[in-house]
Length: 149
Image 1: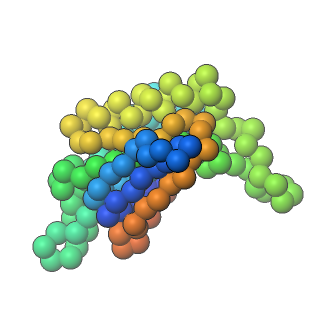
Image 2: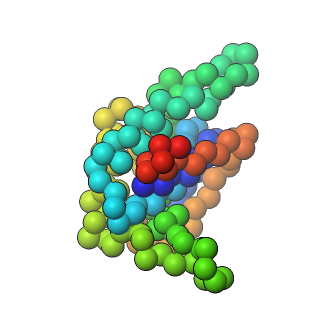
C-alpha cells in the first residue's frame, strides 16, 4: 500500500456535488492498494500514520501525532498511486489491486484507524471525487508499506 499524507487545517471530498466526507485539523490521506497488499501492510501503515509526529508543539517543533492533538483523518482511495511510468508516457495501473481486493483492504485500513477513537471520514471508493484541502505547512509525507519508507 502507498499513502500520501498531508497535514491539513481542513479537508473535504464531494461526489456528485454532495459532501461525503469532511474534517477539520488533521490528516488527509491518499491511499493506493497494490495487488500484492495484505492486512499486514494496512496494519503497519495505520500504526505509522497514527504515531508519526507532524504537528507542532509549543516551541514550533513537530513533536505531536494526530492522536496527540485529537485530530481528524480523511481517507481518499486513489489507485493512480500504484502506477508504473517507466516505459512510455502513459502510466500503467496494472499492479493496482482490483476492486474485489482493494475495497475490503481499504475498509480494513479505515477500521484500523478508527480503533484510535479519532474521527475518520472518507470518500467513496471508485467514485469521481473532488477533494479540497487547506494544506498546513505544507507538510506532505509518502509511505510505502513494501519498502517501509
